[in-house]
Image (cartoon, rainbow, N blue to C red; front, side, top):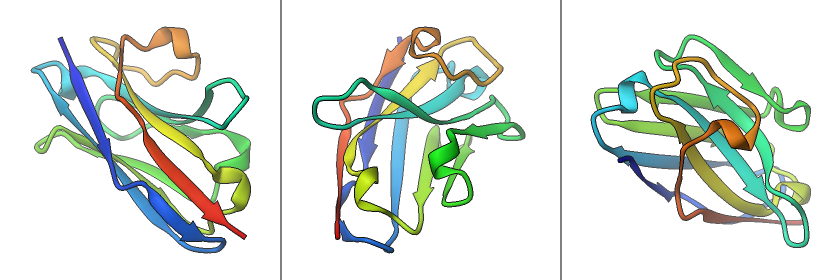
Amino acid sequence: QVQLVESGGGLVQAGGSLRLSCAASGRTFSSSAMGWFRQAPGKEREFVATINWNGRETYYTVSVKGRFTISRDNAKNTVYLQMNSLKPEDTAVYYCAARAGGLVPAQPKADYNYWGQGTQVTVSS
């Protein structure tokens, strides 16, 4: 069993930055690929970024590449999403997800076993 708790969301002006954190419980974190997804009102949940078990492989959706950075600290059981140059279209609830036992990163939602409760990010223009 893995429990995920996101934090760090909030209201920011366009061009600003936020850092999201996702604290994980359970012994499988260090052997699990992790992902960040987001869901805007009226839209489906979409992939944002993913990282493999040791942090050496990362992938991003095109719209955030160069602005967002995913990272992890296995000693702290935490994964981060640094978001810079935020745009109003980045407004969404952001979710952390874990591929328990899956070492490689993945983009499909179905590849993830556990999800956090989400944290709201609002970017004003």
